Amino acid sequence: MAKRQQREIHKGSVKTLDNDYVRSNTDFAKSQYEKKQKVLRSRRMLVFFVFAAIVLAILANAASNQKERLAEKEEKKAEVLAELEAVKEQQAMLNLQITKLEDDEYIAKLARKEYFLSEEGEIIFTIPTEDKEQQDEKQ
Image 1 (cartoon, rainbow, N blue to C red):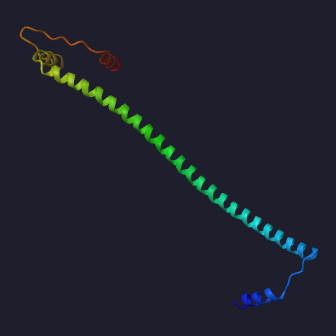
Image 2 (cartoon, helix red, strand yellow; image 1 turned 90 degrees about the horizontal axis):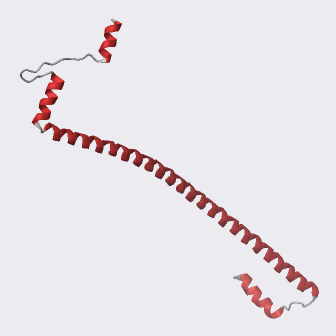
């Protein structure tokens, strides 16, 4: 507050000189002020660009992580779809077997084949398989 009062007092009583030295001195002060402002502006811009670079790096990292996770999930999806197809095929085969088992003739034929059951007057002959022949030869 005291400085302001002193300036007001000096304003009316003190007159500035208008010569080359004073003008060059004020020009020098202006140029110094402008240089200082330019340095401050460049520092602000540097801080802004560093901040922007950090934000971009974080975003790029997040995008990369999401891309990796998406690739993993796509791979898992492909595996699950392949498994689903296998289960559907198995289900279709089981449904076919169920329909066959509902037929009495098929059940009789299966019982004769698997359990060596026979109808009246029928004779069952067993033919050794290659595995049994090889086992017999080894013994």
